[in-house]
Length: 94
Image (cartoon, rainbow, N blue to C red):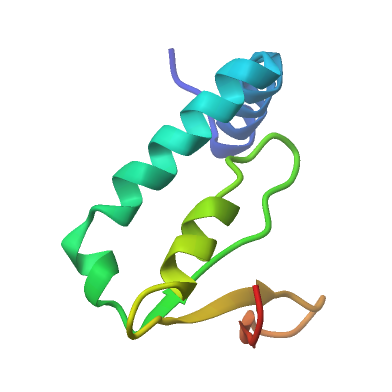
């Protein structure tokens, strides 16, 4: 089956929405734990983040974990304004 990018996004969005809150929460925690254990992330000085919506995984526990490191990375979030390039802004508190 060949699907274009729009169809794939719709397919996976529907699949995420179909998960029960318990399954979603467990999967998010597992994902955050896995990501936190990655050496590249542990050494990072800047981490691009996102604010989950529309069924995307909530990575807030990971961001909290990162801010508690001895030398925490800068957490930056994308902001898109119509007709302008994507920009990243630092979160000074989490």
